[in-house]
Amino acid sequence: MEGSTEAVPQRPMLASGGVFLRPAERADVPRFARWLSDAETARWLAARSPLSLAMEERWFERLLERQGTEVWHYAICRRDDGASIGTIALGDLDQANGSAQVGIALGEARGQGYGTDAMRAILDFGFGELRLERVWLDVVAENAPAIRSYEKVGFVLEGTLRRAMYTGGVFHDVRRMAILHPDWEAWPRRG
Image (cartoon, rainbow, N blue to C red; front, side):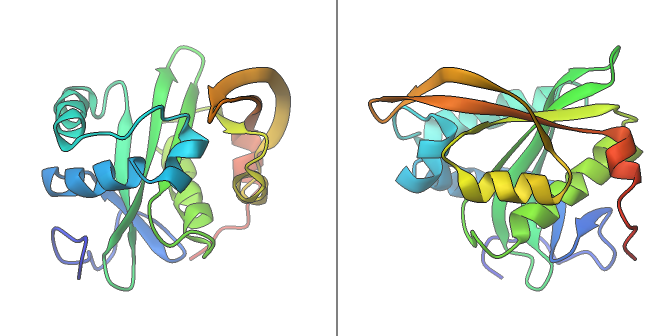
């Protein structure tokens, strides 16, 4: 069960489809550093250089202090074997206005629907438990697979930030997308 730090929960609290979300553990840090230093993952995240294990360990220490107040960060795990395959987080929480930004990075198993499942799980948490009204994200305009996945769960384009991100020697447009609480409520409920 590579990537797992404990047995797969029988009924995970945050789950959808083929994934469940669990808090990140110290044992995940080397995997996170590897994923975020992967050229394919990093190009969509505007990473300028590889991350060292020490840098990721320092990030994890700061995360622990903010988890559950300023940010809700989780490891994405496959239900069938418990393997950690990515990360997802709600951040930039604006409790007065009921808003948060969501960010996701799949380190493994791209193109298999796990990202869409993870997004559904975090939105269920954000709208259901945190009582958010709006969840938003930014995505590089050329990242068509991610945009399709976001649209599948109900995100809509709010606007384009022209030439807002510089990576790989090129300026890229960034799409701002959001989903509102009523859109989430309209989803067919899954058992």
